[in-house]
Length: 467
Ligand code: ATP
Ligand code: MG
Image 1 (tube, helix red, strand yellow):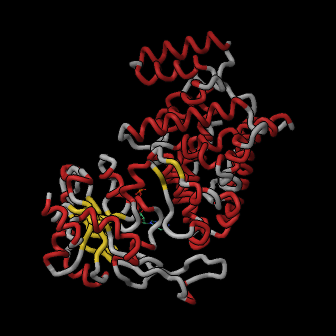
Image 2: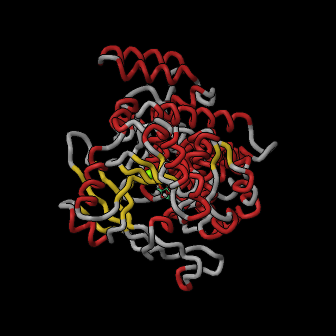
């Protein structure tokens, strides 16, 4: 008891350092018994990286989202390491190390194991760029970010307190500069520094706030939340590719439905995806569109939480489908033939989308393939079903069609027919086609009009409909 007391007076006890941390700029040192991080959840390769750097005389820590996830008892999906070694010094220490990035130079250290190769991202402690002149745009947005600094400075330029903790696997200690661990206990997501200023520096942080709140179930601290609605238009200045990456992360977080609700509540959804404008603005959205997107996202979340892969092209195809369907129907009402109406609707939907956030070309191609396949599921006679099954993207198109069946937008019996057709042997397939023919009359599935060939968008455009 007395020793404990003396230790406290001498400030050697970690708990005492903790309380001093925010005033002196020194971090809280959180020992194993307080943070309870399970070392089994650590990546062996990340530990190898910190160890090698430390052996070479540098400081090295696991940092950021990995520490947050470890403290939550979740196995992180990737590991970042922060060090006082410069990128060149890091690169010299590892065989498979690659310098990447310009705005934010980091080193990728790759390890090849039994499964997928693992990349550990190593970044050098960076300074805050408060008055860094040409590093900052007029709006306050940071343009370049390669000024090295101390660990304390590195912590201060991170976004949320729970993302600014450093874990040293050797001593099993967490260094906490901004009260991240206390916020974890309070289940609070708090921006480091002045939130409005931090959002101006990098408006993407507003989307990150929503994503992490959805993922952790934490509440946004009032001051962190307050400026978002007013600053939401700053997202327009963010380069489209970066915006796209962040939206993709949000949709692939395993909590996409919650995150999209969060975007709406924060008034952040405008201009990101037309479908969000359509369905999330109260009163405007149709129940069907809402149901379709909700089901698609629930399906995605379920797959991601079960560790299964999700294709981004598929996901965007679902998100834009209500918009596409609306345009498709409108074109048909104008007297345009079915497939031409679909093709022109696809162009319109993509054009509207691009005015907000451009979807990467390769995902756009996937999307178009999935969409173009949809009318082909109607045709269940002759060679049509066999040709469709052979399309390289058949599986995605089929899954998409099942989703349409689940919301009743497509006839569920067609979904069942295809499920049976895939599983059947050749005789069974013939029998299924015969049944479809009887069901729909002898003209079942035959095109009413000659199909017009869609001008290919790119090399891998959808296979044109058989005439
Ligand atoms: P996850 O990888 O689970 O999506 P994460 O927190 O690891 O979450 P990353 O984008 O991998 O997110 O970034 C790693 C760390 O870098 C963050 O934890 C944070 O400390 C810092 N960081 C990333 N983006 C920003 C940003 N826009 N502003 C400030 N700090 C950031
Ligand atoms: Mg990460």
